[in-house]
Image (tube, rainbow, N blue to C red; front, top):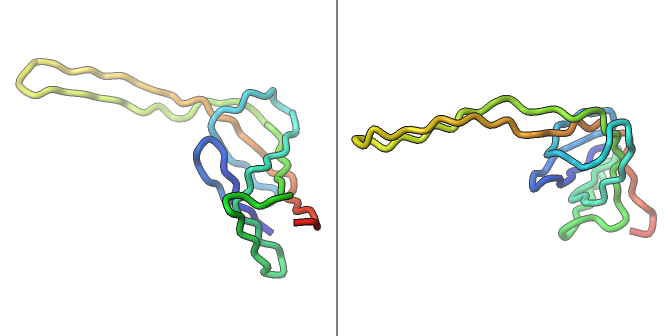
Length: 108
């Protein structure tokens, strides 16, 4: 069983037991959340449910493991022939999630 969820403007294909890094969520570690923005669910029998835009009654339960910062990227801007250059670094704050289970209510 797997699902496609949307978090932080990005889509992730997840299954129970996976650990993923998403854009920072404002919750404390070891807290359990239910993400309801599920775009697609496929079960073990091969039945796929596609939402428009999201599947109604579907949720993915996740546990927040920790908050981390992503790898540093270098932002370098240069204007040629003007002796002008700028170098910055950026580390995006991320949240590590563990997927506990995927559920779809029978009414959907």
